Image 1 (cartoon, rainbow, N blue to C red):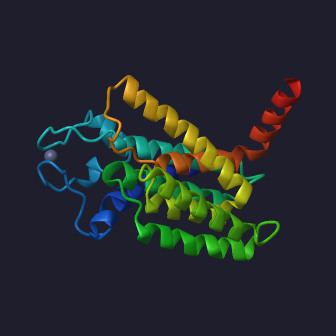
Image 2 (image 1 turned 120 degrees about the horizontal axis):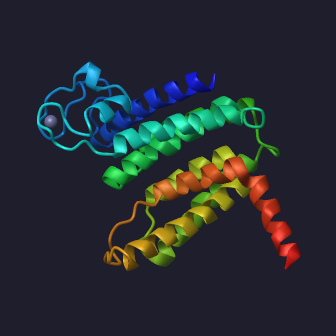
Length: 248
Ligand SMILES: [Zn+2]
């Protein structure tokens, strides 16, 4: 089961790479075939095997020897690992719901890293899937979905007004869609994790790499993975936090 989920995960991860790169450019997901972004040669089917082809080709295009972005195999591997993780956790978390959440986070990670965009098309698609999921498995109480959606939206809306940048409308809609799925408390903890990790990464870029303060930092991946961590580990994080506080 775990091996099947890993293979399924890396194949879907490879598909998500294509979707994430093409949807923001409004090009078709199915046509044309994958091609090398440097020499525009079509990529042969045998060179299009997730992870394996990257390793066999040593990260270079077969024709022009141009470097292939490391993002492709990393996304494929990450999707595979997260799918295995969701399967491992399926006693406590509905597997289909977990896989849907992971897929959304992976897709937004790709589009935000490459284009600094969180496409409405992807958000609307997943919002519809999440509504279907929550109609059959409502949160307790059912209106927690609406609280999660509204508070997330307003929270980032306020931050955008107060900070004049840093976060965008895409982040706002993305967190709201996640909040609809997870409910209020999980999305808030997820957002807190995202702010802390994003802040640390921002400091790292400023201090170690010497970036300018106004360099763009894609915040979508932090939101996505923050909420993913909160979704799977909310109880563990809160009880750890409470016991540590009690000890103090
Ligand atoms: Zn090439």
